[in-house]
Length: 416
Ligand SMILES: Cc1cc2nc3c(=O)[nH]c(=O)nc-3n(C[C@H](O)[C@H](O)[C@H](O)COP(=O)(O)OP(=O)(O)OC[C@H]3O[C@@H](n4cnc5c(N)ncnc54)[C@H](O)[C@@H]3O)c2cc1C
Image (cartoon, rainbow, N blue to C red; front, top):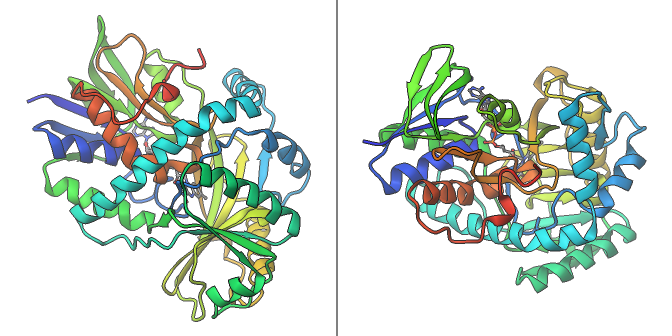
């Protein structure tokens, strides 16, 4: 039986395992240095976002970033560092943040997001409706008229990509959210979007995979690879070596470190985000929303509410800067003055590192000159939205099938 090793049990690793086990008789092991109970795929906002077809690296982001960087509560921060890979990443990010590249990349991103959105429904039908998936769209809430007018332009582009949108003024919006007083100019509802509880999804996937023969080698750090001509024959860990016929690297923000051990150069920076989850909000909001000019997001699951956001490039660490959470909390209170929530205790604030590529597109495909090395990651703020499609594509590549969409834009070594 062909042996497959997947390094990294985030959404990318588990979705790849899901499609590989579903369609084949492979011997699959997922290796993770943690216990898969809290990586970036757990505490995020859980949006499935076909509406996010504009890549993160876009013309506005640099000027917005510079504008915000001087404030300690700012939603966007880049800490300058004298590190060669960081400097290369920053240069490529800057070079990709232009309209021409965005127009080239957006259709590819859109195809991937739409495919993944469809596949998430299939996964739910297969493993069970156990991760609080709701298909009511996502509100892009705007506090100012200017933000609303900009959002209407995004809505126009979305319509060209055949996405369904609905526009609301303040009064109409308040009727949609009867339980909580709003202070919002207007909003665009992207109706194809959905949301899930990402932690429940991860646990459900892991349980499903275990029950279907996938092995989990947890608390095990991958430190290298044994190469044999054009193949990698073994994955080296602190708990011994594992032989493999195919290797899939899905190490999230640490993907570039992992790939380097195989001699492959990948540019990824960790974009730190924060979230906090209120377990009981008596009068909760109904719609998940992105607070466009508040630069954060809110996700309700019945009486539970998660607030989150920020994009902080300050190296791969989990240090909590309370000021950033203050920025999120204050924005939420400004948009929803009727929401009764307290400022979160510092020790309960969750952080995660988004794996951000320099153009905001993921890396999906073969890597290096190896015949048996594949990579899946670098999804930035869209890993939950893209994971299912990335997993299916990885399975297609292992099985040497043609992929359902053109994946040339996601080529692993596109920056080399
Ligand atoms: C605040 C916030 C909100 C977000 N909201 C959304 C959202 O609403 N929708 C959306 O689509 N996306 C969202 N994201 C982004 C999404 O969470 C990420 O893109 C996604 O989780 C990345 O998944 P991954 O599988 O690549 O990495 P991870 O989930 O980080 O998993 C990588 C795994 O690799 C393991 N690993 C790494 N190196 C090694 C090694 N050497 N040996 C063994 N194991 C290793 C790690 O332990 C980890 O478990 C959000 C992110 C943040 C921070």
